[in-house]
Image (cartoon, rainbow, N blue to C red; front, side):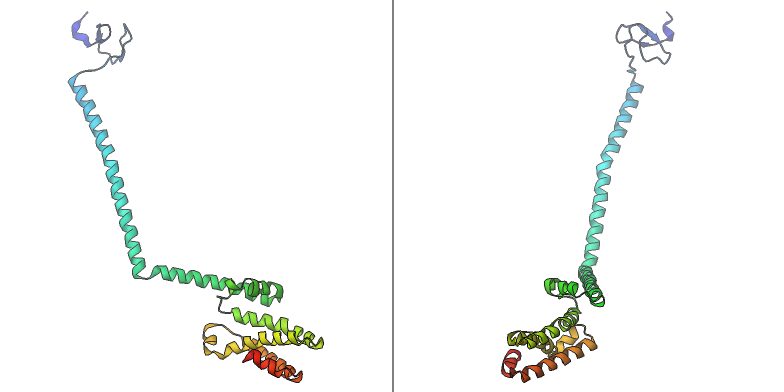
Length: 219
């Protein structure tokens, strides 16, 4: 066998193997491993490169995390400086109030008095925050109570008459506070109708001899 052409030695059977880019011994089938220094150095260099790339990943993640935290802190600081949280909260509250007002307005325009009652009476804790709550409540009062007052008068139900009068009169007297008109929205026609109804019932109660009871309720 020409030894000059033998480049590899099988680690299994010891046979000399010509270098023909084969990776397995043709005699015993053992995998041929290149143990040369050149090949070993190349493998070591490849492993070091992979390790360096792997070690760089946590560093990159750390830089990204630090940059993200800094950005969040900066946004938070800017938000505090410009009072952004309060402005967002205020905008949300205004949107909520607008939604409540639209509910009541639609029910009023549709003359859906049962739905308006649901908003004004049964869900008053939610709707009372709307600036036009008392406007629609007064409108509902004027739709509901005057006919009941007249029915109570015909039935000589003085207690019912006085209760209805008290309800409307207190709603009317609430307007005496100048703050009311600066806080709540009103409607000129509704305000005039309320004043007219309170005066009408006041006159009737006097005619019925209930003037003393009437003033006890109101003053």
